[in-house]
Image (tube, rainbow, N blue to C red; front, side, top):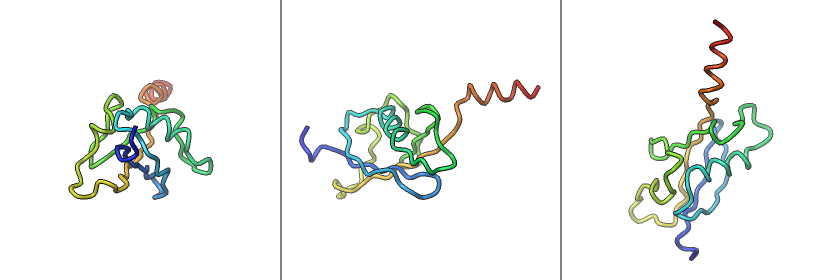
Length: 106
């Protein structure tokens, strides 16, 4: 794929630190991004995802769906084609675990 078609992304964590930037094809899915984030997650963080399902990615105020591609999620930035796009990462335990924890209390 030509270099100019790649989209450069970095991922902002809860404490303001970043993972990346990395370059992705517009055909890369949000699920692929989440897998990379889990693999690159800093070991010294107190809060860490156990898997890709524990991560929510937010871009331009919207939670991104796993089946969407980077190209579909990209917000047009006018005359800034070479800019790095920052996506925010929220770590949330999966609902199955949360429901299990609630049932054990009852």
